[in-house]
Image: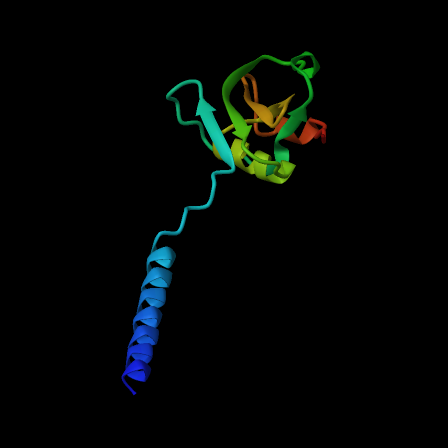
Length: 125
């Protein structure tokens, strides 16, 4: 009979240890990985823009107006164009240049007027 008691006590202790390990592991969750690294080239906080009007260029040679590069987005993993455009709009960009390898340069046009955005062709990747 004594061995039966020892076995029962061992099972109870095992369950307590197992439950404790589960609680500890749940409390130590690793945060979700970042999808983007955003680098701004100056300390100016630009007014956010509408992501529906963000123009996507494949090369700097395609841009036919004066612009300023205001920052860069480095996507850490594959993402959608809509997510990139959303981040660019939050940072105040009018356009982005797809530099390849998940790198994007944020562009702000120097002579951009709100009424002008309706006349610009929106390019897609």
